[in-house]
Image: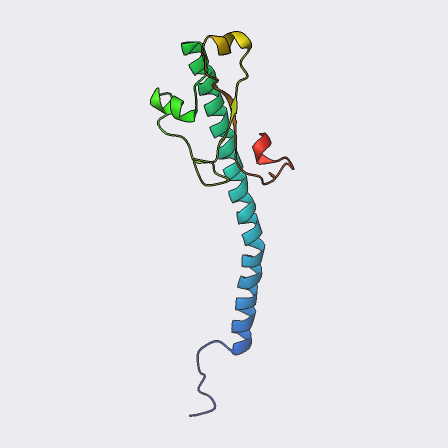
Length: 134
């Protein structure tokens, strides 16, 4: 080989600099992605709760009683299926709040229905409140 012949390619220092810059950029982007994903799950939770509460109220308006469970909303075709809680990733973890009946209703043989629903998650949201209080 002649001294005047140049070998094309990158030096080790150039490669180290490029990979270091890529690593820094990825390191900065991952927390932003995680926060965006969490905020998206929170938005889905809020929308699911809003829709289920709306349907519970609609059921009450239509039938003059609350549904016995979320499955009652599915059975009566108010919901296609019980949504998956985005925080617990299960449709079985919703917390159903039962109505309290007075003595007349109990004597008449009425069963309590659900008046509200909450997430089963015990985690805190980005606003500092627990998901199971939304």
